[in-house]
View 1: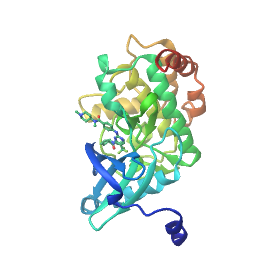
View 2 (view 1 turned 90 degrees about the horizontal axis):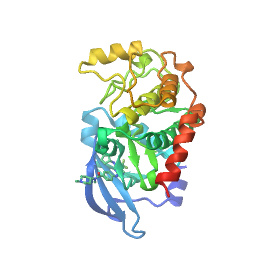
View 3 (view 1 turned 180 degrees about the horizontal axis):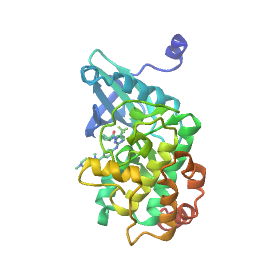
View 4 (view 1 turned 120 degrees about the vertical axis):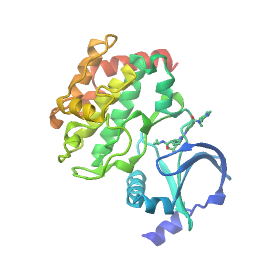
Length: 282
Ligand SMILES: CC(C)NC(=O)[C@H]1CCC[C@H]1Nc1nc(Nc2ccc(C(=O)N(C)C3CCN(C)CC3)cc2)ncc1C(F)(F)F
């Protein structure tokens, strides 16, 4: 199989690309804009030092990210185009998102929030990506604005499968970054299934509409307490139908959370993504 792969697909190397401006730093590497020399195709080049990966015991996570992302193919999932390595580094060639990181776009909005048509249009795309992941028995587990990239024409792609696992799972890994998106079953480190992603979709919808996640507190212990008790309040400006959708996702019992098909077909999602298409995509 390896031999036939070598014959069928070209083995890429760093000198096939012109390296451009730095796009920023990922979890364990630097990301650059790059251009494939022959096709002039723009890509994102993620460089990771093997030594850093080994030091942080992250090599298995990168291996899983590569394994999962090379097998997923969906318009709302960031494509890992290819990868290669040399003696010191691993290089991932990924799709380049022209409009950048969604959390930066969100923070740049007035009141750091999206209007309902924008929130619904983006949320629907994330739900489509998750429904596809779950159909491939992949749980993302780390849905949050930092892991979403914005492409032209308001296309959203889910990225960073470093924390994804095959369902169902009981992974002891400590999560890095924000705890605001953790569902109750993960806070209590119980076994969990793909419905953890449905919970995160509820947190994401809330943050899109309010500019902050529902359980945010100054103390981590306070956040965990609110998550366990599903204790949150709606902001005055939120419509009844958006509150209705969020209340069907932020439920303690995982399997009672709204299935992704019903999120995609939810009246608030349908109505507002149609408004978005008519007003912002023309
Ligand atoms: C999901 C994952 C967790 N996140 C990441 O990996 C992050 C870590 C660093 C960058 C990003 N990774 C990617 N970023 C892009 N596009 C992009 C990013 C940033 C800007 C931007 O705002 N500037 C350059 C600004 C322009 C203005 N100046 C002032 C500041 C930088 C513009 C376009 N495409 C693909 C990737 C990917 F994912 F394929 F690598």
